[in-house]
Image (cartoon, rainbow, N blue to C red; front, side, top):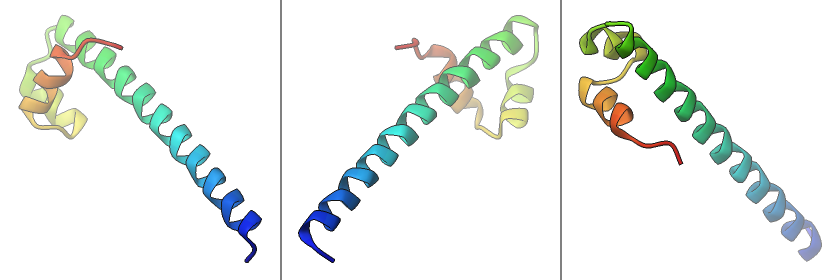
Length: 68
């Protein structure tokens, strides 16, 4: 492998990591909105947590987080 190939590989990996981080932020924002929707609809936190695969504290944390 040449130096240029190695650096190209690094740059590709950085772009891939950046895309994954953006996708994670978007997914978290979407989940947070859905949790708020469920809470406003009267769904109990324990049920929201079960359905989302989160702890109740995790649900509370997402509900308290402010979108960036």
